[in-house]
Amino acid sequence: MQVKLRTAKFWIFIILSGTLFACLSASQVEAKNMFLGFKQGEKSDSVPEGWEVIPYFRMVKNKLSLYKDGKRTVLMVKSIGSASAVLKRLEVDLKAFPVLVWRWKINRVVGMAIESQKDRNDSAARIRVIFGKAAAKPSQRTPDISKFFKSFGFKTEGIEPRGFKIDYIWGNNVSKGEVIDYPGSKNHKMVVVQSGSKRAKRWVWEKRNLIEDFQRFFRKSPPDLIGIVVLTDTDQTNEGVIAHYSGIILMSK
Image 1 (tube, rainbow, N blue to C red):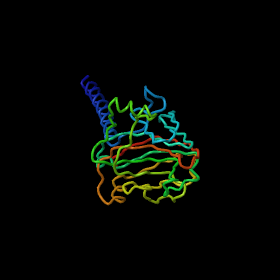
Image 2: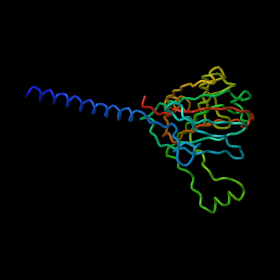
Image 3: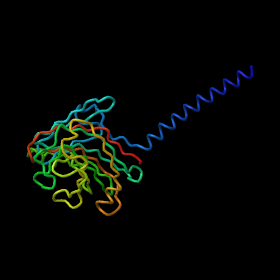
Image 4: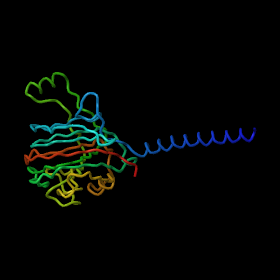
């Protein structure tokens, strides 16, 4: 009888230990990764929950939609002579989460794009990372100011935060791996992580160490990560592309 009791206690201990280990493992994985991917919100079936639309002055907006690809929610962007973005505002110490991972897919590149020229700087897909000393907050305008803007037909929507910026782009005219200045800005770099249509119409995973990239491009240590922008733009070339984005994750290594 005592032997059976000891055996039962032993298996109870094993089961409880296994459950505790599983819980600890899950929490450890959670601590090592920060998932920023998309989730369908209650307020909109096209703007991901926790993200906001960033329009650009006098530009037609892209058409956004969300769909499921297995367990992942994907943001699909249709851009025809248009440009707009979605922004995730953050306040992240890059020492804890230095690595950015994401996946994307395009149907074609912007064939007339010349990334180094201000009047042709379009891209089928772009992930913009913004660095700053303090978390950026949505602009707060008084009701009177909002009414003033609306009286002239301007919508007072989100504004992209200021700071150092790195664009990871799917380019056309520049070779993969090249780093160029964003036209007209000294604190804004563009990295060509994919180029051309060879890998179009398929999902491609990307991984970048943000600390290493910032130090390489700006010759100093980065401030906090304050925003990630997802952007497809065809406003300058007036072409049409479709881009898909998902799986945006900040990782500890």
